[in-house]
Image (cartoon, rainbow, N blue to C red; front, side, top):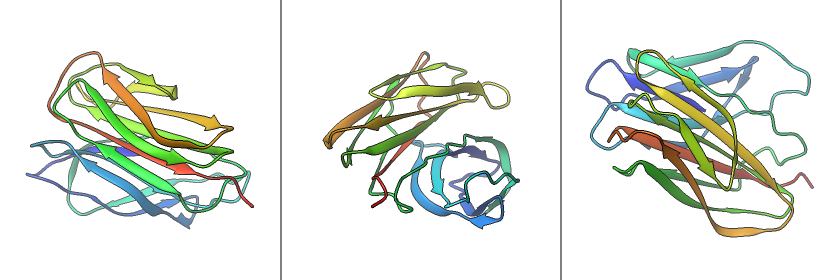
Length: 173
């Protein structure tokens, strides 16, 4: 999950992302309403036990960037569903489908210096990204199929520059 603010008028985006030498593929991108802030989710099938650097190539200069990394084991290599939210409200909500035995991962961003709370996912991190910008990530595994399942990330302080990305992966066959 990449949360960032462009140094220009935006919306600037990630052109490429490489994790431990493996090219990643875009899962979802959410541009915050009326701003240069955005959240992106990328996936890469990195070999188990691998470590290495994360290399992000941008379409233009960036003021800030926060990265959240999740390892998902025993899942298909390509996401099964994605969703985004960029409402002008403290709570960002998106609906997503996940197959039985699958997992959902989400990430959110705000420039309000807020902390985050998640509904229907378990928070993994909540941290500052330079100055007043913060981002958060969460995930959960699901034994049963979930259809139009609502995921909500709520910021403790409101800013109209908020965005959220959510992805779902099913179990490997």
